[in-house]
Image (cartoon, rainbow, N blue to C red; front, side, top):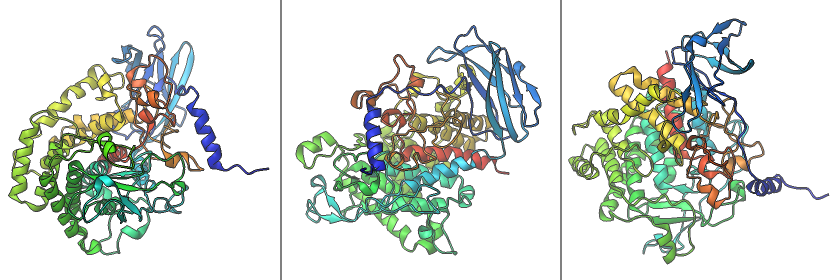
Length: 594
């Protein structure tokens, strides 16, 4: 009898699944934070109703000792979801503060439905750790081994020591086909490529999160290999050591003239196989202004953040600063070199069909890079660059995403009390309407998820988690507890108090995302790796057109989600999304410490 490999079985299942209709499981009518609550935290749950005439008649909580705590007086009237119009009720049990395991039960039509929850001093500690450890699992060019893999060991893939210079990136010093070495770094998302623009944004949020909660991260153990931690004297905290694995890769992506390659990629996406089974040639592709500026910002920020560890890192901070200056200088000389993949493919071979991360407006990248260089060097030239690019961008306030990083610059300037008269007025004004919605129209008691515009590709991160991070910055800047409460509400939404009833983090909660669009998870014998944030509901459903994924008909925007591997438009994972998850959960965990 011929032995059938695990990979063959998985491949067959992938073909079968792509041809079938998929429906999410019924996650029940009780929607609440499935990880738990801190004792002093606001605690609410949403109850979905099939008909507004079938409202809940009784709500109570059972304690571990069997005591019953009635909550019917804390039950709201029927309210309608502003997106779907579906009826819901809210129940508030904030008065419960004693740590323990509880069961929330509702009675309707003489039937009891229950859901468990916990109250504990630090409910987000393990979530933060797992969301950070997800990056260890994303490491390219190395095997993940025990005990560090914690059950998810795999062989090394993509050594990236024989990378070719693509024709679009060729120069006299490095002509087409030149072999360079660019090992390390993190796989960007569900695919196996590495992209400077997205990596730069991720490192920006990462290192800014570290600076905001330095004492917290300095003591957080991630169980990662010791190779990047340094010796006993000046040893790097685990969080900074993990970041260094990616920063070192980014440094290899700078060309000899200071420009930075846009990405390291295969011509086409790999199949859903293990990294060590991938055989396509890898290329560095085209130098762009956006890549140079995101790189410059990252290196300047890293040079400043890692400065206390000079004894451990040798010349790293000097080299990072030099790299940042050279990249910014290249961008000044090449201010409008944009990544246009279709246009590039008309001129150069092989054609490249992986993630574009295209950006045709780099004023925000100039602003962020100038800000980080100013904070590092204090040079008045960069101060004038900040003023110049800020005036070009204007007064429109836009939350930070990989394609618009202006807010990273604003937050950095706010936190460092600079001399440029940056105030928090824009941030607070931007948040105000969302915070009002949490208490006026939201069926989830959330400042996120109350408008159809809240749902798009990656909305769990770029919408919900980032709004929570903005609230944490507002709390640090003002001390107003209202902002911390709304940051908690954003995390409640991610962890289950939402329209689908999913906890959108793999491996956590009673109803977690379990089938992400993630090659590392799909190809691993153990299955889905823990700690990854799914993209979230996406009414544009781009995968329905390209992969034939079948969504239920007439599904509301906040339910346009499938926990289904082919659904890359709603269920992929990425490094830039995970960084916002841990920045939010860590910020809240740090505030809950005694």
